[in-house]
Image (cartoon, rainbow, N blue to C red; front, side, top):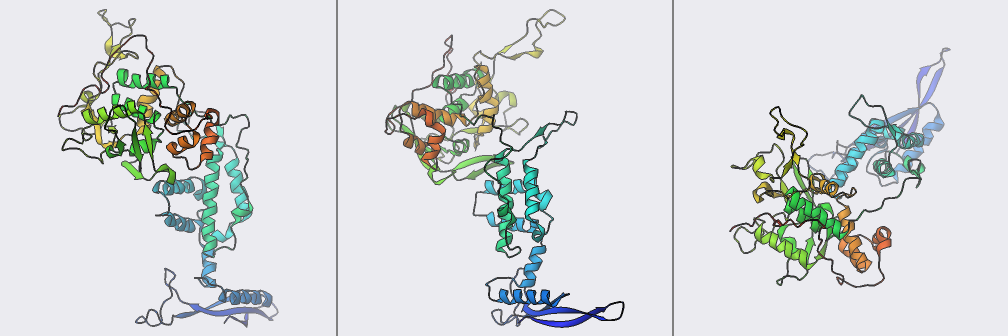
Length: 506
């Protein structure tokens, strides 16, 4: 039981003793993992070792206050002793950050855990990582909040450019603030601090980083004719009909980018009769990471779903699987239902299979030269020839040029094929995610009920669908009663090319 002892530790100049007061108590000895050390190693569940502790105070009142605190601690169910709690308070915030990140393993998706740790390293570590957690006050949190909200130099890799001051978006500030709050919550639970100072300094719903003149986000869906023009350019001009089909599938199924990459051959449901509706089963996602792809689960419980597709798209996918995909024909021995539905591409400089070259796996496209630029002999200078932006390609990319063992990377396809096609057909910039909006808007405009569209999109709540697509919601209800038509490009001349370049021979 804690008790107080009077002691003389030093004397004044006059030689008078200066009393001090020691608080003495005993507690269980613990190892580095916090477990009690048994008195007898042969009986690990027996009586634990005890160690003597003491702490000195200048006044009896302070000693009595601490003694009362120790007595109160004896009646609390805590894993650590009072002295250990004091030591925990001296631990740096980085120690509790490590505990928090370790606790995320298995509880959240790996991607979320990595992004959370990246937020900590970018916005929190420099300020608080080495600070004793018990020394962090509400004033420190207010300064941290002010620093997040204040303008800062924009990151630039060109030192010769003038410094531009920018403010962080709220979507950046709130995760940083939340991560700090959760780390300090761990310190509270472990007994290192009595309360979390972040709770007394709320971030607030409106901040100075929000510009009142900045318009709210609005989706930029494409029309059916625009989808047709873009996919026609990707297939006919660029020479990548497989990626044109991937764009069409995204625009007419509403899949997220990771869900499209997560599709396997076996996830496509094809009817026995041509022209009937098919389906796509969503059970996984894939995301490109350094060195490969990361397979995960859909965004929410409702994101695990089956999406119906129109009959014409089901027919296109059937022909693609049977005639082009090397592992997509169930009638052949090399059929693999776990093979990615849409393939990736070999990167520039990547080692290719024997017999292939970079030139061989690329499409052969028509080129144009500047008639004003000529060589000394008067001939046209073809060294600066550029691809003809409208001419049909001479030869599309062969099937062997795709990397069928890895899934499609929608971000790569968006950068190298989708966005150039938008510019070529003179359409405004759209993100890959706008293909998802395209499906939603076309379905709602055609008369599908918003609750049904919400299920197909995999929204966690119908409210999300209402908030984003309120202007497109029609009055009538129903299931897949408003079929979407095949996108047809509007062109001045009729150039014909096989959808997939050539058929696979068995």
